[in-house]
Length: 283
Ligand code: PRT
Ligand code: ZN
Image 1: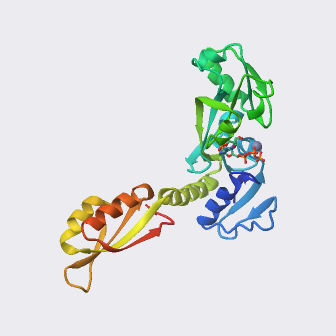
Image 2: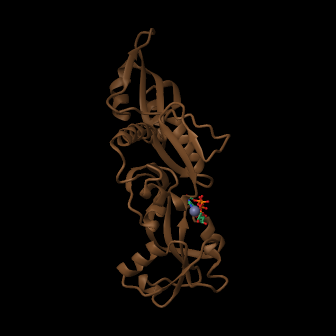
């Protein structure tokens, strides 16, 4: 039995649960119990505040956990980062009032910075030889400059909307973050085996992220050209149609390339193009 700590509620909760569900862990979320067992896999889920996940995994109270890398870096507990999970993307950045002119890291010399991430900030300041006063606050960091509590802030930024609303400009990105799978460094051999199986399943979801499955009919004479446009994972599948001179072609493309590829394929005669969402890619 492996025990995984995930966020009880908040930004990472839904994606963590849906990742577990999509790899076959049927967790009863309606009960929202402290511990939920998966009937399909030897796994117990522990619901925690994200702040407590690194310590819980480091101490062995949970074997593994899903948490933002920013929390792992800030808390400094001994855990192994096993996998980047490609959700919860954000950055931890320094920001100052829009009305100010930024002159580089030395801008912060002798100034006061409000943050909930004093350790990450302290390290960046030391690395850059800057002497600032760190003002640690738990929430609503972004209002600190406007109420005169600090000169700048160090906080999580995603779209940048919160900074803009508070007339702040982002001046340094100190840490890039996303949700990561972490493990206890002393995890047992039996649980390591379960963890590897879980990582393999997670990877199939991550690899499918944003990819599309394409099916189309195409004149057989244009098949070679189509294969140059969409190389696929190994090579596209081509099957003859009952209609002479026509083939059916199947392939996988990344979501961002989809429309470009579809335009090119139409130009060489592709018809009846179907686009399907991909759930998993098992390598
Ligand atoms: O209750 P608990 O302690 O578990 O949750 P929490 O309130 O501490 O954390 P939560 O749920 O807000 O965030 C959990 C994790 O999500 C963080 O540790 C990050 O790894 C990740 N994450 C991703 C974010 C954001 N994006 C994000 N935008 N965490 C916070 N924000 C906040 C940020 O603090 C700021 O106030 O959103 C605002 C900025 O967003 P934009 O889009 O306006 O730039
Ligand atoms: Zn928290």
